[in-house]
Structure formats: C-alpha cells, structure tokens
Image 1 (cartoon, rainbow, N blue to C red):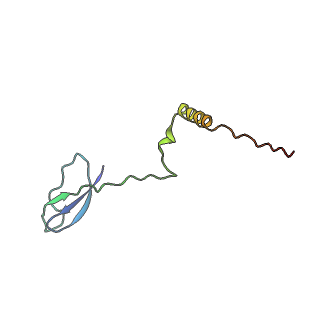
Image 2: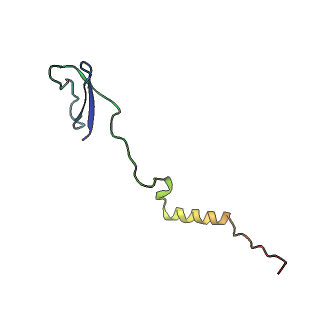
Image 3: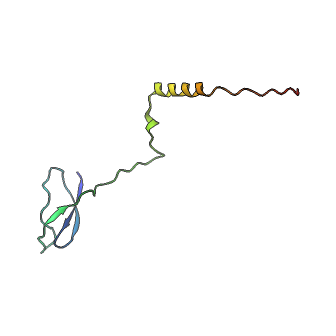
Length: 88
C-alpha cells in the first residue's frame, strides 16, 4: 500500500497518509478547527533506487549471443605477426 501526500489549501498543512489504492481520496483537513479542503499531491512517490556496481543492457545476454559476439570479435582482430629480425 502506498503513501500519499496531501495539502490543505486553507491552513497550508502538508501531511502523508498510508492508504490503499482502492480507498477514497481524502477531502477534509485532519487538523483541528481547520476543516479546509485537501488535494492529493502528484509525483511524490518513492524513487527507484539501483544498488550495486551497475546494471547494463548486456548483463543478461544469452549464452549463444555471447558465443557469437566472442567469435565475431576474434575474427575481426587477427593475431599479430611476430617481427623477425635479420640480425640473428
């Protein structure tokens, strides 16, 4: 169940409430002696957090793709020829 932020337009009170997505939106300010109208604030949800060394598109490639990529890389870079000097 998500947390929702609300703001009262009469007393400027901002508060957060934990409620189901199926619950009705609040309409009245919970502050005593206020009774003002509240509106739900948008875009105040939790952010997405990635932890670790990184997440890359290539992290979850199939084994057949990795084998084909390795073969293509080795074919495009032929082994270097050794330099033989005539001084020996």
